[in-house]
Length: 158
Image 1 (cartoon, rainbow, N blue to C red):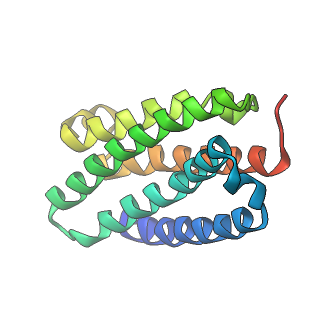
Image 2: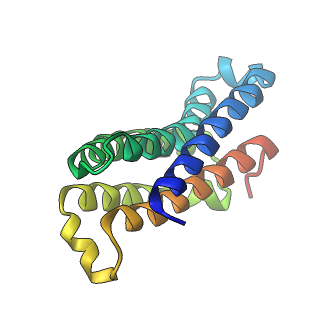
C-alpha cells in the first residue's frame, strides 16, 4: 500500500473514532460535570483527532514535503502538550489501567514524530522514507488511544 492510500484510510478512521467518542461522552454526562474526567475524555478525543489531522495534512502537500513536515511538527507539539495534561488528570482520578499507566510513552512517540518532521534524514537509518516511519508511529499512537478509550469506558482501574 502506498502512503497516500494509508493516510487517506487512517484519516477517515480517526475522524470516525472521534465521532464515535462524542457519542460515548454524550451518554456519560457524569464525565462532563467532573473536571478531571472531562479532561480525560478530551484527552481520548485528542488521541483520535490529532492523528487524524496529521494523516489529512500528509495528503495536502502532495509532493511538497515541507507541508506534511510542518503539519506533523505542529500536531506533534500539540500532542505532547495534551498528553502532558492528560497525564496530570490520570493521576488525579487514579486511572491505573495499562494504557493509562503507560501513557507517558505516547509523549515519547509524539517526540519522535516531532523529531522526524524536523530532521527527516534520521529515518534513513531504518531504510524507510520519513513519512513511512511517521505512519508506524501514528499507528501506535492510535492503538494507544483506543486502549485508553476502552479503559475509560469500562471503568478499568486495576
